[in-house]
Image 1 (spheres, one colour):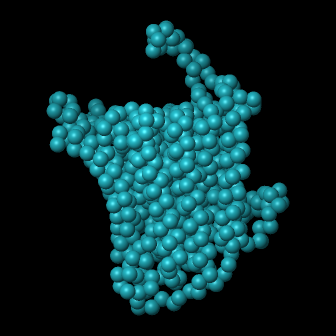
Image 2 (cartoon, helix red, strand yellow):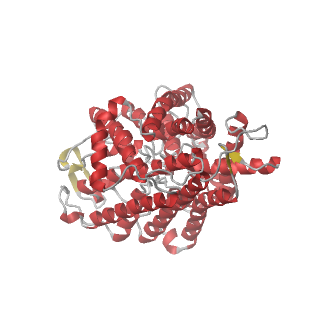
Image 3 (spheres, rainbow, N blue to C red):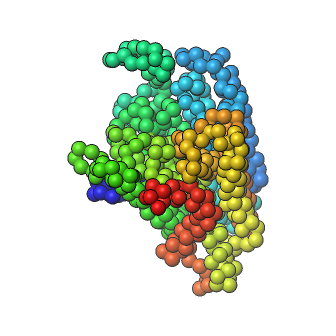
Length: 581
């Protein structure tokens, strides 16, 4: 790590911290129905939407009805998404004349965007029409994070409620998330991105003459190039803000039309972690104790910061094999040094490492560099952040309610240690809550490991590997970690556009989303029915540095113990081979 890298990392973290409280305060006001003054003019639009939907905003739901609404909204979105993909050749706004998306790819993509995963086994500019990108990808980039944030709000109500039966109204929480939070911020960011050069147009692709003719793989002389464009800025803004990550272009945020300069890059980087970070303060504000929210934020940051510095440091250290060849990897005024393979020369190592860590800490999945080209340890960090359960900030809503699952497990373990009934926020944590928390924790882990195992023992799975040995195993582990934790990023060395991977990864994506949401809502309903227990001298404080360290240890141990054998056969042994061990 050089001084420049350290400064970039610290400046990014400082900016994130500065925005956490004000954005968190605003979201708490929205979910409490106290819309801040400047946004009250949207009230008539909100009420009109309820009339169109046929929803009574005053009608409350129990956790089962709330869960049904979440599933119902997802089912409708999936069917419409799949249908548009399959018939896009007959629909307007298709200037490139792109054909129908293959059934297995359409299934995988529809599930992926439905679940806030945005796993892409396709190149956006060569597969999806403008209409598909706008009505499917961009729309789902609003819908899927709004559903996750709504589930979090239901859990918060369950924790603070006393002897009740309802956790709110899903359609109200869903509507307010989009109307008052995601949409206004997205419009502002989109305008900024357009000012930085990101396209927002419905014009056809451009054909330009090359400055110097070249030859294609068949030896044919090429004198022209097609430059893809489209309504990019509107998709990029919400893809970062909503922890979506799906790119308009195949190379995602490494494309200059998605990330044209350092100003756009920094804003997009902030958006990746902004809402997940701010929701911690929203949580504390809504339960009436901001110390609890800051404790969760501190836990996430305590895990994230060391891993971020390890990732950047590993990439800056470079490859020992080059040192033996006499190639300098030291950063100077003339070169960035380190491992620049697969990275944008516009941004360098520090920005690439921050992006890789931030996008995998949350379920974002966008990339501005190719993770397949990272050093073994540098590539291990994004993999590890995903396999911790996407709870280190995590996706919008789903990251924090995933961390709350770990809080329940941590409180339960602490209670066993001291021989007391575990409590959290005045509610006793009993067998039912622990069972639901175990399901929410173990199901994604199960699908990651089982999916990886199937891939490495079948001919169809092995056919997608670009590299043999430990690195090939890392490619498979990364893909299923991404799918099984609803992240969406890829190592970029695995050919996943096959019926085998489209189907298997799609099933992992679906299970990871809904087998986490349902137990979380069940926990919300259970806690809501319980009476509040007054704190006593024997109550475990859950806002202290001691609890923060204990909770962070539980998160790391669960992830490390589950995946350490697989890591040992993949990135760790590859690192030892790189060192010549």
